[in-house]
Image 1: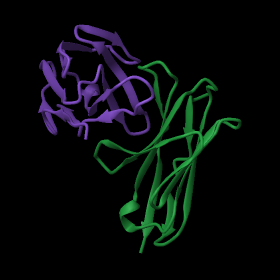
Image 2 (image 1 turned 60 degrees about the vertical axis):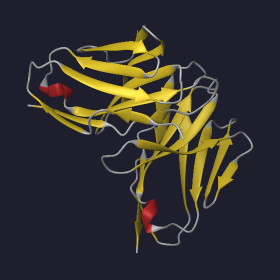
Image 3 (image 1 turned 45 degrees about the vertical axis):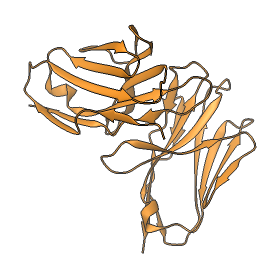
Image 4 (image 1 turned 180 degrees about the vertical axis):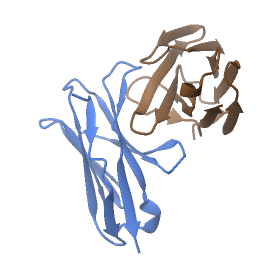
Length: 110
Length: 112
Protein backbone atom coordinates (compact mmCIF):
# COMPACT_ATOMS: atom_id res chain seq x y z
CA UNK A 1 0.00 0.00 0.00
CA UNK A 2 1.33 3.43 -0.88
CA UNK A 3 2.02 5.88 1.91
CA UNK A 4 0.11 8.65 0.14
CA UNK A 5 -2.61 8.09 -2.43
CA UNK A 6 -4.35 10.46 -4.78
CA UNK A 7 -6.82 10.04 -7.60
CA UNK A 8 -4.73 10.80 -10.72
CA UNK A 9 -7.73 12.28 -12.57
CA UNK A 10 -7.88 14.07 -14.87
CA UNK A 11 -10.57 16.28 -13.48
CA UNK A 12 -12.07 18.22 -16.37
CA UNK A 13 -14.11 21.18 -15.15
CA UNK A 14 -15.51 24.36 -16.71
CA UNK A 15 -14.29 27.77 -15.70
CA UNK A 16 -16.02 28.97 -12.56
CA UNK A 17 -16.62 25.49 -11.19
CA UNK A 18 -15.74 24.32 -7.71
CA UNK A 19 -13.53 21.25 -7.59
CA UNK A 20 -12.19 19.20 -4.69
CA UNK A 21 -9.34 16.73 -4.42
CA UNK A 22 -8.66 14.30 -1.64
CA UNK A 23 -5.45 12.64 -0.59
CA UNK A 24 -5.22 9.77 1.88
CA UNK A 25 -2.19 8.87 3.96
CA UNK A 26 -1.44 5.62 5.71
CA UNK A 27 0.70 6.60 8.67
CA UNK A 28 -1.22 8.05 11.60
CA UNK A 29 2.04 9.52 12.94
CA UNK A 30 2.23 11.94 10.00
CA UNK A 31 2.80 15.46 11.20
CA UNK A 32 2.94 17.93 8.34
CA UNK A 33 0.85 18.18 5.22
CA UNK A 34 1.20 20.25 2.09
CA UNK A 35 -0.35 20.84 -1.30
CA UNK A 36 1.94 21.62 -4.22
CA UNK A 37 1.10 22.68 -7.72
CA UNK A 38 3.15 21.37 -10.62
CA UNK A 39 2.89 22.65 -14.16
CA UNK A 40 3.94 20.46 -17.08
CA UNK A 41 7.74 19.97 -17.13
CA UNK A 42 8.24 22.39 -14.24
CA UNK A 43 9.16 21.97 -10.59
CA UNK A 44 6.53 21.54 -7.84
CA UNK A 45 5.66 24.81 -6.14
CA UNK A 46 4.17 25.09 -2.69
CA UNK A 47 0.52 26.01 -2.89
CA UNK A 48 -0.29 25.82 0.79
CA UNK A 49 0.49 24.05 4.00
CA UNK A 50 -2.43 22.27 5.65
CA UNK A 51 -3.16 23.04 9.27
CA UNK A 52 -5.22 21.03 11.71
CA UNK A 53 -7.95 23.64 11.87
CA UNK A 54 -8.12 24.00 8.10
CA UNK A 55 -6.93 27.05 6.23
CA UNK A 56 -7.90 29.20 3.33
CA UNK A 57 -5.93 31.26 0.83
CA UNK A 58 -8.16 33.14 -1.56
CA UNK A 59 -10.03 30.61 -3.69
CA UNK A 60 -8.18 27.69 -2.14
CA UNK A 61 -9.19 25.86 1.03
CA UNK A 62 -7.25 23.02 2.59
CA UNK A 63 -8.51 20.71 5.30
CA UNK A 64 -7.08 17.90 7.38
CA UNK A 65 -9.08 15.01 8.77
CA UNK A 66 -6.81 13.10 11.14
CA UNK A 67 -9.47 10.60 12.15
CA UNK A 68 -9.94 9.43 8.57
CA UNK A 69 -6.37 10.21 7.56
CA UNK A 70 -6.97 12.40 4.58
CA UNK A 71 -6.37 15.94 3.45
CA UNK A 72 -8.41 17.84 0.93
CA UNK A 73 -8.02 20.79 -1.40
CA UNK A 74 -11.01 22.80 -2.56
CA UNK A 75 -10.70 25.24 -5.44
CA UNK A 76 -13.56 27.69 -5.92
CA UNK A 77 -14.30 29.69 -9.07
CA UNK A 78 -11.76 27.73 -11.14
CA UNK A 79 -9.63 29.68 -13.60
CA UNK A 80 -7.99 28.45 -16.77
CA UNK A 81 -4.67 29.15 -15.04
CA UNK A 82 -5.51 26.61 -12.34
CA UNK A 83 -4.90 23.82 -14.86
CA UNK A 84 -1.99 21.86 -13.42
CA UNK A 85 -1.17 18.76 -11.43
CA UNK A 86 -1.74 19.02 -7.69
CA UNK A 87 0.60 17.02 -5.48
CA UNK A 88 -0.15 16.00 -1.94
CA UNK A 89 2.95 15.82 0.28
CA UNK A 90 3.12 14.38 3.77
CA UNK A 91 5.96 14.50 6.26
CA UNK A 92 6.21 11.81 8.92
CA UNK A 93 8.13 13.97 11.33
CA UNK A 94 11.58 12.70 10.42
CA UNK A 95 13.29 15.42 8.44
CA UNK A 96 14.03 13.21 5.49
CA UNK A 97 10.71 11.46 5.28
CA UNK A 98 8.53 13.25 2.78
CA UNK A 99 5.99 11.15 0.95
CA UNK A 100 4.45 12.26 -2.30
CA UNK A 101 1.16 11.44 -3.90
CA UNK A 102 1.21 10.70 -7.60
CA UNK A 103 -0.61 13.96 -8.29
CA UNK A 104 -4.11 14.86 -9.49
CA UNK A 105 -4.37 16.46 -12.89
CA UNK A 106 -6.84 19.31 -13.25
CA UNK A 107 -7.97 20.69 -16.60
CA UNK A 108 -10.08 23.82 -16.47
CA UNK A 109 -11.91 24.38 -19.75
CA UNK A 110 -13.34 27.64 -21.13
CA UNK B 1 11.37 33.99 -0.46
CA UNK B 2 13.51 30.90 -0.41
CA UNK B 3 15.50 30.47 -3.55
CA UNK B 4 16.84 27.11 -4.66
CA UNK B 5 18.85 27.32 -7.85
CA UNK B 6 19.89 24.43 -10.05
CA UNK B 7 22.75 25.14 -12.38
CA UNK B 8 21.25 23.76 -15.59
CA UNK B 9 17.70 23.58 -16.86
CA UNK B 10 18.45 21.13 -19.67
CA UNK B 11 21.43 18.84 -20.08
CA UNK B 12 22.34 16.28 -22.72
CA UNK B 13 25.14 13.84 -21.94
CA UNK B 14 26.55 10.69 -23.46
CA UNK B 15 26.54 7.26 -21.88
CA UNK B 16 29.57 6.82 -19.65
CA UNK B 17 30.16 10.52 -19.02
CA UNK B 18 30.54 11.83 -15.49
CA UNK B 19 27.78 14.35 -14.81
CA UNK B 20 27.60 17.02 -12.13
CA UNK B 21 24.31 18.61 -11.11
CA UNK B 22 24.67 21.62 -8.84
CA UNK B 23 22.17 23.06 -6.41
CA UNK B 24 22.45 26.18 -4.27
CA UNK B 25 20.01 27.51 -1.68
CA UNK B 26 20.08 30.92 -0.08
CA UNK B 27 18.10 30.42 3.13
CA UNK B 28 20.64 28.71 5.33
CA UNK B 29 18.57 25.51 5.34
CA UNK B 30 20.12 22.55 7.07
CA UNK B 31 18.56 19.84 4.94
CA UNK B 32 18.96 19.35 1.22
CA UNK B 33 17.63 16.64 -1.06
CA UNK B 34 17.97 15.25 -4.54
CA UNK B 35 14.95 13.64 -6.17
CA UNK B 36 14.24 12.33 -9.59
CA UNK B 37 10.80 12.42 -11.14
CA UNK B 38 9.65 10.03 -13.83
CA UNK B 39 6.22 9.55 -15.38
CA UNK B 40 4.25 6.93 -13.53
CA UNK B 41 6.85 6.67 -10.76
CA UNK B 42 6.47 10.06 -9.10
CA UNK B 43 9.22 11.65 -7.04
CA UNK B 44 11.87 9.32 -5.66
CA UNK B 45 14.57 10.29 -3.18
CA UNK B 46 18.14 9.71 -4.34
CA UNK B 47 20.16 11.25 -1.48
CA UNK B 48 19.73 13.79 1.24
CA UNK B 49 22.05 15.75 3.50
CA UNK B 50 21.34 17.15 6.94
CA UNK B 51 24.61 18.99 7.43
CA UNK B 52 27.86 19.87 5.75
CA UNK B 53 29.74 16.73 4.75
CA UNK B 54 26.85 14.57 5.97
CA UNK B 55 24.82 12.48 3.56
CA UNK B 56 22.34 9.67 3.67
CA UNK B 57 21.12 7.34 0.95
CA UNK B 58 17.57 7.66 -0.15
CA UNK B 59 15.48 5.08 -1.94
CA UNK B 60 17.43 4.88 -5.22
CA UNK B 61 21.10 5.84 -4.62
CA UNK B 62 22.64 3.36 -7.05
CA UNK B 63 24.67 5.05 -9.74
CA UNK B 64 24.76 8.37 -7.88
CA UNK B 65 26.90 10.11 -5.33
CA UNK B 66 26.63 13.49 -3.63
CA UNK B 67 28.82 16.17 -2.16
CA UNK B 68 28.07 18.83 0.41
CA UNK B 69 31.17 20.85 1.17
CA UNK B 70 29.27 24.04 2.03
CA UNK B 71 25.91 24.44 3.69
CA UNK B 72 24.34 26.20 0.74
CA UNK B 73 25.50 23.81 -1.97
CA UNK B 74 24.53 20.20 -2.64
CA UNK B 75 25.87 18.45 -5.71
CA UNK B 76 24.62 15.28 -7.36
CA UNK B 77 27.15 13.25 -9.32
CA UNK B 78 26.41 10.58 -11.87
CA UNK B 79 29.64 8.61 -11.92
CA UNK B 80 29.02 7.03 -15.32
CA UNK B 81 25.80 8.19 -16.91
CA UNK B 82 23.45 5.59 -18.33
CA UNK B 83 20.33 5.93 -20.44
CA UNK B 84 18.12 4.86 -17.53
CA UNK B 85 19.24 7.99 -15.70
CA UNK B 86 17.41 10.15 -18.23
CA UNK B 87 14.99 11.99 -15.98
CA UNK B 88 13.93 15.24 -14.35
CA UNK B 89 16.18 15.92 -11.35
CA UNK B 90 14.86 18.10 -8.57
CA UNK B 91 16.86 19.58 -5.72
CA UNK B 92 15.03 20.71 -2.59
CA UNK B 93 15.90 22.32 0.70
CA UNK B 94 14.11 22.30 3.99
CA UNK B 95 14.34 23.62 7.50
CA UNK B 96 13.31 21.15 10.17
CA UNK B 97 10.24 21.57 12.35
CA UNK B 98 7.35 21.07 9.98
CA UNK B 99 8.35 23.44 7.23
CA UNK B 100 7.71 22.54 3.58
CA UNK B 101 10.19 21.49 0.94
CA UNK B 102 11.40 24.20 -1.41
CA UNK B 103 12.29 22.93 -4.87
CA UNK B 104 14.74 24.17 -7.42
CA UNK B 105 13.55 24.66 -10.98
CA UNK B 106 14.72 21.22 -12.02
CA UNK B 107 17.25 19.81 -14.46
CA UNK B 108 15.97 17.74 -17.33
CA UNK B 109 18.81 15.35 -18.11
CA UNK B 110 18.92 13.28 -21.27
CA UNK B 111 21.56 10.56 -21.57
CA UNK B 112 22.10 9.30 -25.11
